[in-house]
Image 1 (cartoon, rainbow, N blue to C red):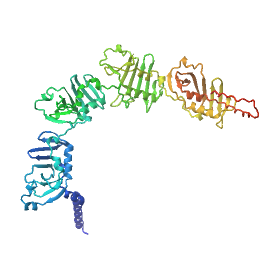
Image 2: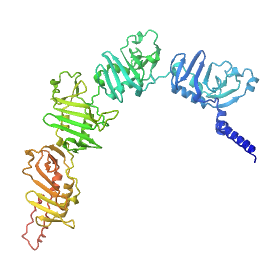
Image 3: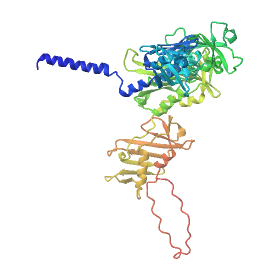
Image 4: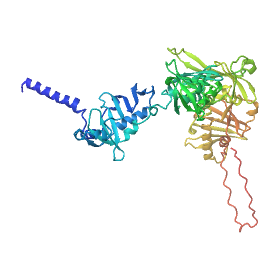
Length: 619
């Protein structure tokens, strides 16, 4: 085959593929073509950017701008997008029930007048790319629910349902958007509220709201969100009048108050002014909304914003803690030194105890408690007299810090404090408190102080021993007497000091309790009331065959709540163990000899059966 022939064939093939791609690809398939043939009108809804309805002398003109519909005639206002989209959907699915050809119409000159299509009073015009001609609506047909329609400059007439007629045979206000504003709550970053009591300004920074006027304070996100939602979700009850006339009848010449919402980069804002209550609709209230330049009525509930006071919007949480950046907790109390808790991965350590593991669950509990703690009252907005509240010399301070190991563009290396709580005098059930970077004095529950331990010993981890029972090699128990056991080669225990048959199950239970012993809580330094000088139980054990690693547990006096003080030699301070744990550590290790069988009544007629006292739990 010659090369010229090959080139010609390639060109023809390319042309065929191009035709298939650009022409046939866009052509409707047989099913779609059948559907379109049955439609009164065919158009691309996404390309329609205008609708004009002529109903007698009344004209309604609606245009789409930036994906939103607006009324242009007879009044300029936001249009109801859902009503317009429903109209377009009904037009798309509008089916012909019958067709009367132009030839039939020409044969009877009075047909158009008979159908009400010669001078149609109701018309709709779609505006946009490939929009159909204007649609004329005629009379209702004898067939129920049907009517006559045709296109402008065409005599061909269709019999179709009256559904579209019902969509367009409306008053202009039926197409107006009853949602007050298209602004959504998430877009609002600033609020100015004017009430009879004064002016408030609220500003959103990041994810949280702050009060800027008449005082600077943290705002309650939920309450401010609810305030904003009063406007962004408001539904218009009545369209009353434009705002260019006399506003006195509506109480809007001198409004009782207003709320203005600002989106990002919006310097003018959207102002809602609140007026009086209509005489005939006591459950509504007159308002004026600046972006729509009109007087409306809204549900009377919206006037509740005028009763808002600064304290109503203040964040009643004691402190905001960004746990993502929290790396250090520093607790200071006069005469008790300093405790520094540091984050290590998901856990915490006590840095001033050689980075010993901390009771991480207790640290997390404290953080949760502080985050959820509510202010009982706002005492002073300006902390000008700190001695009055004991805040010039706090009884306890708690500092929250982040920590960077090296310099970055955002932070310097080292510890950076971002909030400090100071606790002053106790009065009644409250303690005066201050966050040092806020100019207020507040009060919180005094019981909160009980959850903030100033002694680093209180923050030690609760695990006393972390062994496996089989790691324990030698065991000595001292109570009213001393017993000592050693693990044999066959993993059985034998006496090193003691006699009698060993109760192997009780030894194993004791080992299980001892190897993984946990404190209920730490109580701080050892003191005489703990009675460790007269212990009721001392357990010494080793965890290697050469007996070099020696561990010692001492149990002292009972606590008021029915538990027991205890200590270990390798840890500083005293802790509490539960009563079940102590009972497990005091199990009897000597097997009780089986009682001889009782003599039968026939062989010993004088025998009297008497109860046997249960043995006490002694080693």
